[in-house]
Image (cartoon, rainbow, N blue to C red; front, side, top):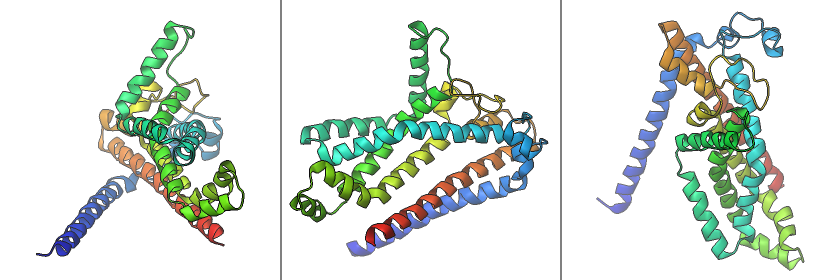
Amino acid sequence: MKRETFIKILSWLSFFTVSFGILSLVIFLIIRGISSLNLRLIFGTVPILEAVTGARPVWDGIWPAMAGTLLLLFVTMAIVIVPGISCGLWLSCFASERGRSVVGECVNVLAGIPSIVMGLFGLEVIILLRRTFLPNGKTCLLLSAFCLAVLVMPALVTAVRSAADSVPHGLKVTAYALGMSEAQTVRHIIIPSAAPGILGGVILAMGRAMEDTAVIMLTGAVANAGLPTGLTGKFEALPFRIYYTSAQYTGAEELAQGFGTALLLLLMSETLLITARILQRRLLRKWRG
């Protein structure tokens, strides 16, 4: 057998294996969770308007977990976007060879840290704060967002660095020849042309932050917390709700609600990916004219 034929067969086998695994998971979630995916799953017996405005608490639906997940995601990305994008651009455009090597290796090490270790790190941070200058400190949404931001930082940094490195060298040379400074080249040439890749990195970080359970389980997520009351309070989240339901369910109906919650979380993640694709295509069309 020729080497090219072997590589082609191996590639097709890999494609079918990955596709089969993904389709099996999606079909399994649809079969087990589609029956419970309705407004009652989200809002329970509370009217939608009263649930959304917080006029009445929702104890038999997952609306508080959805609201907590969205707020957690917003705070996490508010923390991580600026330093993540800045670090990626610095590694690609401004860092020396030694700085690129040292910081790049640190990013790679951080990317390999398990999420449970990051959760333990957040728990230790709040313990140290309580022993020093914050005696009333407690696990909360802000602490969870900070730990998630550190967790997803490497993915964002790597994506931004790769997007900036992929900008054709000829564009940079042309910009320098026209008298642009290095900062102006980054601002007017590299960032616009790398924008689709940067956006992809942001969406990747959002997806990772949305689905993680180990970090929030140790830093602020609890069951039946209700709607989030602020950055320093406890909160509910969909990943923790799925974990809690799978561990504590008392009947087939409650288990089906857990599968419905998992299916809803998957749909939210897919919505992010589809939105990212649409924005990437628009950015590419705008850049290419």
